[in-house]
Image (tube, rainbow, N blue to C red; front, top):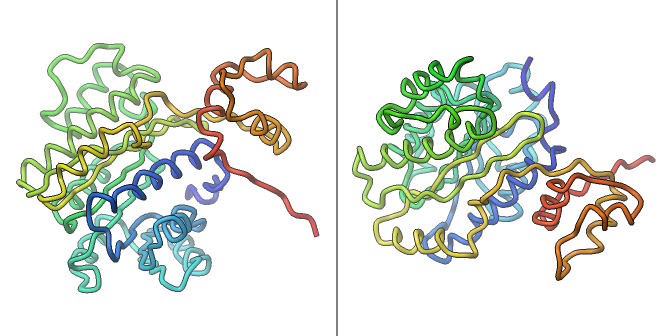
Length: 315
C-alpha cells in the first residue's frame, strides 16, 4: 500500500515541527550565501505539505515533485497546489539524472528533500550520492528515512554488517551494541549518515565541501531520522559553517522530537501559559484539569511556536 493511502502527512505534530525547523534553518542561509532563484525538489505525494512551506516561507516558485506510484502520480497532478509545481512520474534514481540535465535548473541553487517512508537502503544511498555529486553550488540536501533498529537486522551483528554494506568505511570497526539498539540506533544512523554525506563531497573534491546542517530525530509512531547539509560555493563555506555552529541555528536539536498529540483546547490552554520564566511541570498541567507526561510537556514547551494547529470545519 502506498504511504499516502495510509498516512496524512500533514497531520503529524512531530513531523510538522521537523519540517518547520528545517525550513527555519534554510531561511537563515541567504545571510551567508546566494539562494536567488532557489528550486525545490522533493516527494510531494498527494499532500504537498513541504511544497506549500517552501513556497510560503522561502518564496520558492519552481518546484519538482517525484512520484513513482501510478495512481499516486495522477492524484499528485490533480492536487498540485501551484501552477509552478512539476510532477515527474518515475523512481527518484531515474528522475534525478534528468533534472541534472534540465537547462531550466542549471546554474541555480536547489533545495532537495528526499523524504522516504522506509529505512536507509541502497536506493536512498544512491540518491544521496547523485545529489552530492551533481547538485549546483549553494544547494541544500535533506534526507528523511525510518530509523527503527529492526529495519537494519534482527541482531546487532546483522545491523553492523548492514550499515557497512550501505555506508562503507564511515562505519567504525567497533560499534557498541548499545549504539545499534532502540532509540540509540536513530542517533547512530544520523551521525553515520552525515559522515557518509561528508565523505562523498570529499571523495569528489567539491570546492565548497559539505557542511553538516540538519540532524533531527522525531517520532510520530515510527522513529524517523532527518539529516542533511549545505553544498556551498567555496567562498561561502566559512560563513555557512559559522551560521550552522551558532546559537541561532534551529535544525540540530539535541533531543528527539516527540510532540504530544493534543486536542485544540489542550494546545490552546498550554500555549496561553507560554513563554514563561520557569519550566512547566506535570503539577501545573494537572491544575489545568488534564495530564501529560513530563517529556510531552517539555516537547510542547520547546516547540510550541512550531506546533501545528488543526481544525475541522463543518458547514
